[in-house]
Length: 490
Image (spheres, rainbow, N blue to C red):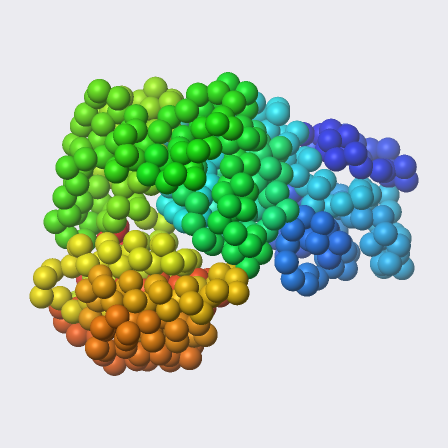
């Protein structure tokens, strides 16, 4: 696009810009000055923008890096007028290439919306308290298997910065046929509603409502209302894809502006799974039903929660015209995203399920159940569980109850990591687990697991990002060899 269109889209002020600036062609937009290349547009973010857009914490004022961005070849930089005044001495010489705005993050989002409008193709949005990334990847995989070129967000690009940056890729790669975008939230500041204003979904997939981010939202009802913003924000005439097994999600049908497709295992739904059988890690089969049509699926991921994610993806595929046979074939060739259910088989003879990206009570218990269902009967079952974050004032009691529930599942060893995981361990002890350990941090937990793991064991590593349980996986990979050169999907 021409820079003039960018300036118009973000309501930028360029009264002192060089006359040739609006005619410059641009297609790459960055917020990290270290990533700037020749011809890019750099958006300088500062603390006021972060605060206004729901980001917690203190952030560096990247107006200080505008000079470096120009040195790296930026064609223009977007800055707040007040931040420019503070850095005026060092930026005055670049005034003719600066675009002034009131809020740089809002400007980035406005530009993403303009790019989306010009692209004008379908958006599938995914949200939920757990499983968003896996469901997004499964949905992208299913739609790609039908021959469509699919844009999807990478890493954790599901917030007010990652989402617009993902959408802005369409300025350079407009040949995508559909976008599958994960939308997250963690505060009561209507984050999902904001994301929907950037890209109103044609298909809105709701996975679940769980007690996550209670510290910021206060109640499960508030979480449900925040998640419902996805259905409320979808395009008129679009389709809401709702989990019939979650009553709070099922109730969102009342907010749908178009069609509703339900999916589930326990309750009646249009897209269903039945005849579920688990033969081992990476060996699950079920019958997929879409209306009256049926087909057998050999599913390489484990756990009821992942079958629900598969049903959500299948629902999206159905909306895009795929047959049940095509859906079943596609689901038989999926793989989990990194750190979200990867199965690692080690030459020493033990198996590790790496689910170290995030955690909450329901997700942890789902993975524990998966471990118990998939493990050989004689296997020693070990769970390494990190402290679960943002659970609010009842965090200690929630950890304790979750520990008791873990004990009831039949786990042999629980290794709790950091903080409130001590309550998790104490709860498990009360519930009857004979072998429980508390580790002050992930480094201590890693050493403990490396010392104890034996041939025949099955291990689940599960934890919130802030606890860094991926260090446990890193230690295992440093001390033990994997079977073959690849990681099996789980």
